[in-house]
Length: 511
Image 1 (tube, rainbow, N blue to C red):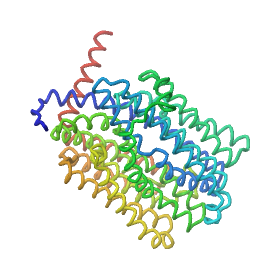
Image 2 (cartoon, rainbow, N blue to C red):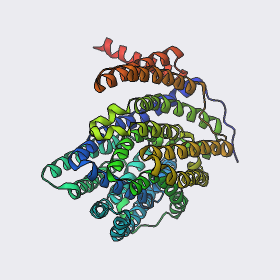
Image 3 (cartoon, rainbow, N blue to C red):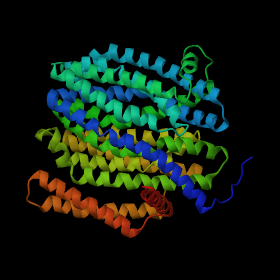
Image 4 (cartoon, one colour):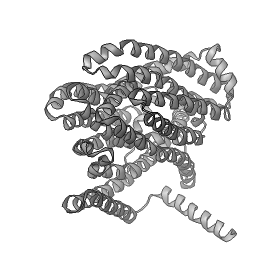
């Protein structure tokens, strides 16, 4: 029987906000630490050249798209099952769920890797690029290690323990990739060596994730459950429909680059890939909130507490916007300076980056749509992704041959904006959940003013590119903070700010 919860007091909301902010804050540290990843890609682009980096980017996109089969929807399934098991105090249930997910990920990953390895020559022949064979075969093993690590990390995050992802994917993974590729490329390893370095770094990251997992849940029983324990069939059934959903969204996210690689030379693929390295961080901002969302919404859905979920989702959406809007201003308004670090031949991708940023911002702001999958309504997400894929199937063959990089970006952004609007509509229609609030409007207004004034300075000034970039970005950042402060913080943010100030003052008096 459903229950109608009583309205929480403001102090309860403030406490919830503080707890959520702590978890999200650790995930954001992970995101900030991963700033080393662009350095890794810049190094690849400069040492491999635009053509070699284009081959790597195209191969990685194809492997990454197929990796959703390896994942098999187990990330969301584990997050839901472990969070529920943790709420009930069922430690064995959490172990069995994680073990089953590991078994599925490893088995499906090996099959996908074999399929890619065998079909690599045919793919390279179809693309007219023989150099694709080696990177496809080497990178095919990356999703196995990556998603195995994800199972360990997601299981700990479902208990609201966020620090281990920071240690593994925030610090260790980007640094190991950077160090390994630096050594191998300096020794003349070339494209094959770079791909081998990536695969090695992912395997090492998986081992570290397993080590940290053992601090929260027993690793030995989990591995035994993965090898010969009883299969958690409800978990597998939960993940099965997510395979189609994730495959649709993965296809949507890679169709532009894959189509561009078919019609245009590898140098164009390289420039477009450089744009994606930056703008994808908009969607990663939303992903920083994903563990907290997955740990909070399932229990609330189980008790049918829709008012609580709406307050939670609106708060989380506002926080996403506070972080994502400045990135959007940076990518849409100042792409020339960001792409210059890859090399002068990459700057021509700036218009495409601005268009891609629009699509990625719409994806970042679709956080309420997580509730569809968490409530067992993943088919609506799949339908929304299908709309995006259908639009791109129509637009890409028309726009890419004619407009190249910009055409691919136009197709991607159009599909994303339409599909994310559809997802949000489904979320509200089916679950009565939405993320709209006046606080969200304040953030959007502040970002719009910052973009207009910062971009004006960048465009009109006659200084060198570096000077225009830093002055324009500095002006935009200052205006954003000033306007946002003038419009006022929401109740939860004020409470947390006062708590931080009180804590700092307390430490000062103690000292």
